Length: 117
Image 1 (tube, rainbow, N blue to C red):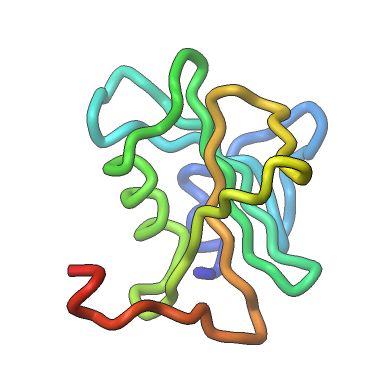
Image 2: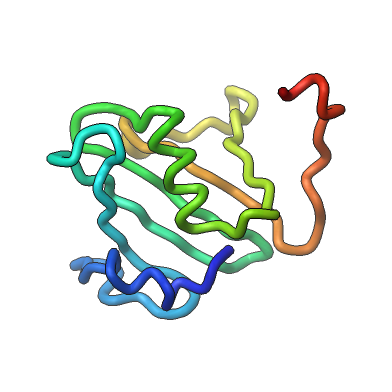
């Protein structure tokens, strides 16, 4: 994950999280699709994972919006994933929120390039 201090222009005070620090915080990023719509972003680094959650008030983020956040918060050579856990482990605390994850100490296996193009 990129240094969160480098994203200072997006960092905002959050009533629960405060200002955050180098390991996490709350950010507000303008949607690349609708300039009048902001995306609420919570980023954290810890427990062996980099994690970014993205939410909007009235809908889930689109693929393009998630890709925009991925490029903003992660380095170009980092692979991140969205996880769809088995149903018994699925927890939905926010209907319009999606997450990006990256393990810090191992690479994410990928299918052959021709399958993902």
